[in-house]
Amino acid sequence: MVKIGEETGVHVKVKPHSKFKEIYLVMLEDGAQRLATRNLTPSLTVYGERLIRFKSVEYRVWDAFRSKLAAAILKGVETVPIEPSSKVLYLGAASGTTASHVSDIVGESGHVYCVEFASRSIRDLVNNVAAYRTNISPLLEDARLPEKYAMFISGKVDTIYCDVAQPEQAKLLADNADVFLKPSGWVMLAVKAQSIDVTMDPNAVYQQEAKVLRNRGFDVKEVVRLEPFDKAHAMIVAQRS
Image 1 (cartoon, rainbow, N blue to C red):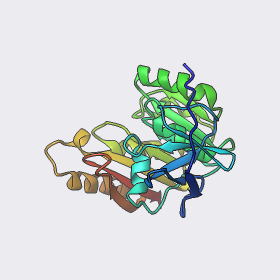
Image 2 (image 1 turned 180 degrees about the vertical axis):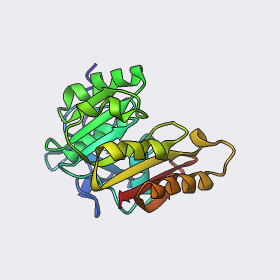
Image 3 (image 1 turned 90 degrees about the vertical axis):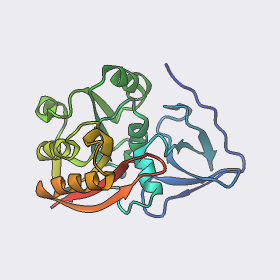
Image 4 (image 1 turned 90 degrees about the horizontal axis):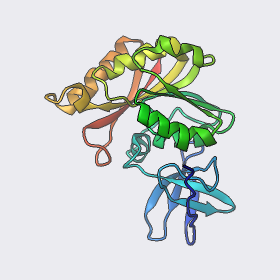
């Protein structure tokens, strides 16, 4: 079902993020600041997000409590290796909340390959997001088995974004990188500590997953905790050495 959003924007200001291309900061009427992306599908929303028009351009407010990528940006991550024209492999795309903002960022000249295992989530992704965005390819596949969907991905990708609830998250990401990632390409791993080991301290889990990536040939650039947006989560940003 198409979701038509109500556009509001009186007394609202939008400015480009100082570090990241096609990511914006919105100053709302009450002085609160939010992230936003330029809407690739004007008037349409994905998850009920607010639409704002500023200087004849429509933006989608990006909810950091519903997107770990937005949370990482607000928590001060130094590198977001997703930009206009990027080819991104998104593992664990769910119903497309964050993937839709990634689609906004990479634009029509970029592409987002969305792997999701849950049939209900992929149905929502197809019906609410991919049907209106030509730069998204939804794939109903298991991210633990990259060889099964290799035929659907054209060439190598610039970045892999991974947000899966699996015990071996870093291994899964590295296995996909071996198949799909360009030399010197980047990865972003949203670590869910409780999916890996509920008995371990979350910081120990983050370091364990970072070590897995280092052992698989990555230079881990940063580990950013995502509280208060997501409890016991962190974003790991790494580059293939």
